[in-house]
Image (cartoon, rainbow, N blue to C red; front, side, top):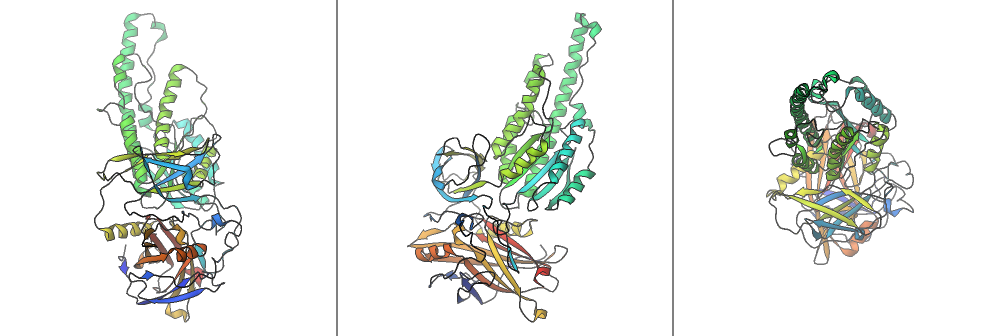
Length: 579
C-alpha cells in the first residue's frame, strides 16, 4: 500500500437509523459526537422506515445476501466457519434449511452452532437501483449470487489429444457464463502460468485461453512409456525375462517422472490457494486435467517389488499423506476443488485400463471430498461439468461455531456435519487448523482489512448498500456517504440484557493505476437492547460519513468488518459515476 490505514481524527458524524440509502425515504437521524472514535451506539427511538429498494416485498428471506439467525450467543472465543452445499440424491440443491436442521461435530464432539446464514439465488427480479446507490448484494442487483472461480487448465497431466478437446470445452463454457461471476484462469505446464487475473469479462477470458495452445510435454510422455514387446520372441523364456526387465526399468523411471509431476502439481495448487487466500468468502477451483495417480505401480508391469514403490510410502513424496496435506492447504484458503476429467468416456474395458482409471479418479475424489467440492469424470460434457461447478457455489449455507476443545496447538481437527433431513447430502471442507491465538488483535484486524482492501474482488460476506453524493461546490471534492447494513448479519453477544459487538470500517481511495491515495479506518462498538435490535433488523442501521476526496481519486472502496464473525463486506464506487 502507498499509505497505511490510519485512524480517523474527525470528531463528529451523523448516524441515520433506518434512513433509506437512496434518499427516497426519510427516517430518524441522531447526531453523536466522536462516533468514529470508539463510539457506543444506543438507539433511543423506534425505526420508522425500511430499506430503500422494495424490500424483497413478499420475500423477506432475500433481504440480505447472507443473513444469520437473530439468536445471540453468550460466549466469545474464536469462530470457525464452514460453507456447506446440500443436495438431494439427484444433485438438486436443497434450499430453505434452518439452523436446527444441522448438527456439527468437531473431532466427534457436538458443537453449538452460533452463526448461520443461507445463500440462494433471488426468487424475484429486483428493481433498478436508484442513482448513486452501490451495493455488493446480488439480490438488490437482480443477480444470482456471484461465484469466485479459478479455472486451472492442466496440460502437465493431460494427453496432448485431450488438451485440444479441453480447450474447446472451456471456450464453449465461457460463451455462456454469468457476467457477475469473477473468474481467473491458470495453465499448468512444468510451470504455473496466469493466463488472466480475476475478471467478469468473458471475451477477455476467452482470448487468454485461445492464445494458449496445446503442448506436447516431455514430462508427460516420460511418465507414459510404451511397453517393450517383440511378439515373434514371446515363446523364448530368455527373451521374455529380458523383456520384463526392460519394462521394469522403464516403469521405475516412469514412476519417478510421475512423482515429479505430482510435486509440480502440488506446488501449483498451493500457489493458487495462496493467490486467492486474501479474497474473503468461499472460492472454487475447477481443475481441468487428465489426472494424476494417487499410487504408483498399480499397472502391474510384472515385477513384484515395483508394487512396493508407491506414492503412499513415507519415502516417496505424495499420495494419501500428501494429498491430505494438499487438501488442508486448500481448506486454509477456504477453496473447494472441482476436478474435471477431460478424458471423457473410456471405451477400453480391460482390467489394466480399469484399475488405472480408478487410480486417477481416486485422486480427484479424495481432493473433492476433503475440500467440499465434487469430482466430474466419465462424461464428454466437460463444459457442462464446469458449469455445474459454478452453480454449486450459489446454493450454500454458512455455519459458524466456537470450538470448546481448548486445544489451540496448530493441529488439524476434523469437522463432520449431519442433517435431520432425509436424503440430504452435505458437502463441506473436512476440517481446520487449530492455530494458536494471535495476541495482537489490532495487527490481525488490520491485516484482514488490508487483504480485503487490496483484493481484486469485492467481499460479499456482509451485504451492504452505499449511497454516495458529491456535495457542492464540486471543487471541494467532498463526498457524502450513507452506509446501510442490516445488523441481522452481525454476530453479537448477550451481556446484561443487551446485545453487543463491534465493527471496523475502512474508506479507501485509489487512482486510475490502482495506487492507494488515502485510507482511513474506524472501530465502532455497538450496544443495543433487544427491542432496539429487533427494530433495526426490520430495517437497517445506516451510518453517514463525509469524505474529502483526493483530486486524483477515481475509485472509492468502502469496507465493513464484523468483529464477532470476522465477516467482511465491501463496495467499490466509481467516482466517474457520481459526476
